[in-house]
Length: 102
Image (cartoon, rainbow, N blue to C red; front, side, top):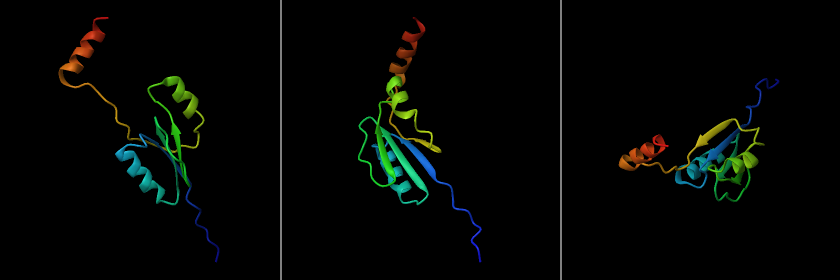
């Protein structure tokens, strides 16, 4: 009897914030699944092994991001787990006011 079931297509995850608590746990979990390849992105990068590779990139730097990430055509899923400091309360209002007055 012939096996007519096709192999599941490979999935490639781009995990932004790979060295954070959420990103690290997500990468650990995805690495247990046989049909996933993982690319972790963080400012410090990491040690690649097996189906996990790391790229050091500062996403707040547009030219660096373009240079280091533009060739990632195999990515099928993006997981954003990076911490981004955002102003809150009065500091946020003050920042918006300053931007509005220019």
